[in-house]
Structures are given as C-alpha cells and as structure tokens.
Length: 150
Image 1 (cartoon, one colour):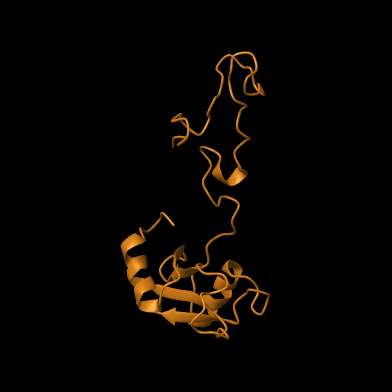
Image 2 (cartoon, rainbow, N blue to C red):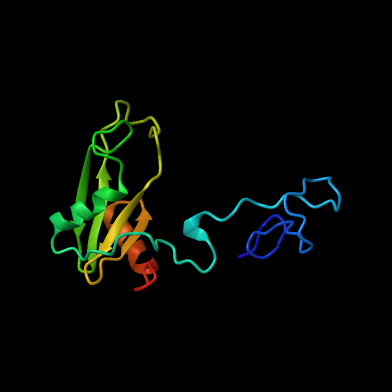
C-alpha cells in the first residue's frame, strides 16, 4: 500500500528514520508530523475481521435473515429500513433493505447509496454488493466473489 499524497509505503508519510517522532511541519528537519497509529482492524500483518465472531453457514432463508440483521441499522429506526428482505439463489442468500415509499417519487432519495449483502450457502462468507435490484446485485456478486477471501 502506498500513501497517495507522498508515495511512501504503508502510509507512513513523513516517517523520519532518525526518530524525530512528533515533529511538526516546519520544525527542525522540516518533516511533517507522523500519522496516527493504524486502527486495530487495519494494522499490517493483522487479518481484517480477526475479532469478528466465527462465520455461520445459513441453513435457510430465515436463518440468513437473522445473520444479515447485524449488517443493517435496526428496522424502523430513523433513516433505517422498514424491512429486510431475503432473495435466495443457487449460491447464497441476498439480504437487502426495504425502504419506505417516498412522498414525492420524483425527488432524489434522502440518503442514497448503501449496500446489500450476500451470505454464501457453502461456507457462510458475507460479501457486500451494491444496492442494485436483486438480479443485478447477484450478477455483481458472481463477478466479485472469490471463495476464502471475503
């Protein structure tokens, strides 16, 4: 990984090998301050989601819905979905939110965007896919998903 601003490895822009940690920009040596430490989930050599609970392989659409609830805001919360829906297909379960009908259908959505998730039937991998209609989201999943990398 490189820092796009400085082109240095691992995002350590301005890291001073001489050890002048905390030097401010314009201070002796002219080095910018060191970046904050890595968040625990992105530290080098640490597997993302290492603290996550073990994967659960869904046994039915209802079971996939229960697993999927952890990935969406509580149903009925402000700006949250009014329902969660499950679309079963040969490789897994697409879990997506059902949103209330807008008062003005010609107006843009209040909070556009978002994602759906697919829970793989074979191993319980959870993959996020764009908030597309089910058929399109499943097509994206089939293009993106690589077993054992989710």
